Amino acid sequence: MCLAVPARIVELKGDDAVVDALGNRFKAKTTLLADIKIGDVVLVHAGFAIAVVEEEEARKTWELFDEIIAFEKTQNKVSG
Image (cartoon, rainbow, N blue to C red):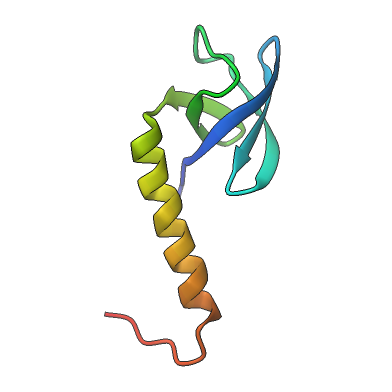
């Protein structure tokens, strides 16, 4: 399964960016997007920023990730 993760651009030099997703920072290329700036939220897949997303949409995804993390920490895991 492939997954694109929303992340905020925190550093930018040319088409090399450092992005932050839930406190995790990693490198991403912005070659596929024009007019990207620090503070933009992008979807990152396979090391490339592939789309700019709205803050609210990114926040919804980050909240879902938080729910998954919380579920993984529970002792009695029952889903569904």
